[in-house]
Image (cartoon, rainbow, N blue to C red; front, side):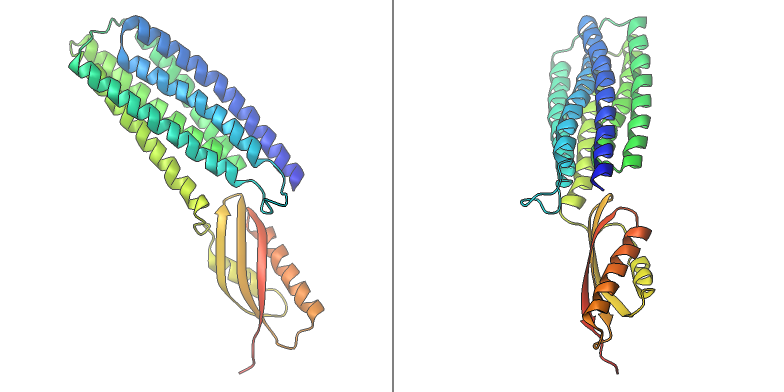
Length: 293
C-alpha cells in the first residue's frame, strides 16, 4: 500500500513539473508580447498562465505533504493535504481574478490603443494549442491517479483555453476598430477565473467536510449479506476522497456467535468490500446481536 502511494506521488510530481515548464513558457510569451503591444487582454491572459505555474508549485508542496506516511498525530494519514492545497489554488485564482477585473476597469476609464499585428495572432494560437494539450493530458492523468491536485489544476488550465479564445476575439474586434473590447474581454477573463476557483472550492469542500462518498449503499449491503453468518446490515456511513474512502456499518449476527467466528465475519466483510469497491482504504464493522423473533 505504501509502495503504491509512493509511486503515485512520484508520478504526480513528475506531471506537475512538466506542466510547470509549459505554463511558464506560455506565460512569458503572452506577458512579453502583451507589454510590447500594449494589449491588456494578452497581458491578462499571460498573468493567468503565470498563476497556473504558481499553482503548480503550490500543488507540488501539497502532494509532498500528502505523501507522508501515517504517524501518531495523523493515524488516518496525510492525504487530505492534497485536497487542502487544492483550496490554496482556488484562493490564488480569486486574487488573480480581482486584479484583472480592476485592470479592465482602469483601461475603460483610461483607454489605450493596442498595437497588434500578425504576431499577436501567432502567439495566441500557439499558446492556445499548448494549453489545450496540457489540459487534456493533466485531466486524463488526474482521473487515472485519482488526484484532486491534478484535476483542480487542469480546471485552472481549462480557463486559460476559454480566456485565450476570448483574447483572439478581442484582437479581431480591435482590428475592426473597437479597442474598447480589449478591457471588456479582460474583465470577462477575470470572471472565468473566479468561476474556476468557485468550482474547486465546491469540490474540495465535499472531502474536507466529510460529505458522503459517491458509493451505492445497496452495493455494500449486497456484498455484506453474502458473508456467512451475517443476518442484516444497516447504518452505513461513508466519507473521504475517491481514492481514500472510509466506511463504517452495523452488522447483525446470531447472538450466540463465538468471538472467533465474529472476528472472522468482520475480517471477511472488510476484505470483500475493499476487493469490490475501488478506493476503499478502511472499513469499521460494528457487530450487533440479532434476536430471533
